[in-house]
Image 1 (cartoon, rainbow, N blue to C red):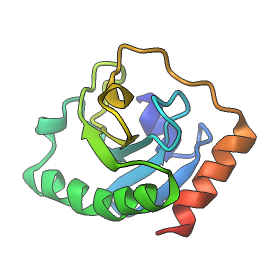
Image 2: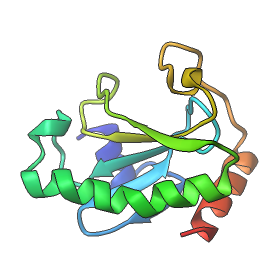
Image 3: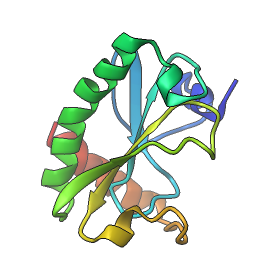
Image 4: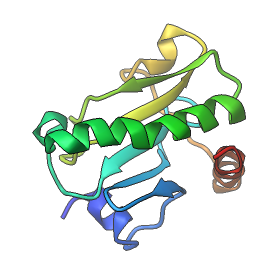
Length: 129
């Protein structure tokens, strides 16, 4: 069982943004920038493109209102997306508020955000859904 499956099952707490039958979205606790959200399938599959075809299209439809909410809640020029998948063997999509190209640079140090600020960010995004 991956760490994401444990988060989805509620065994590990998360800052949940949204969920439906197939997907779960939550704030990244080690974000590149504040408002960085992970969207994961509830189905445990390692590689993004190994998801069933219907999931590939559905994950984007699920992510769209979340990206819109991030853009309204977090000062940014747009919301970028990235699929890397090397750090956790469970398919996932990163939604990242962008103001500059370096905001999506995964080689730079991650932020450490206090729980109280994570709650604030969560509420700002969820309020926009």
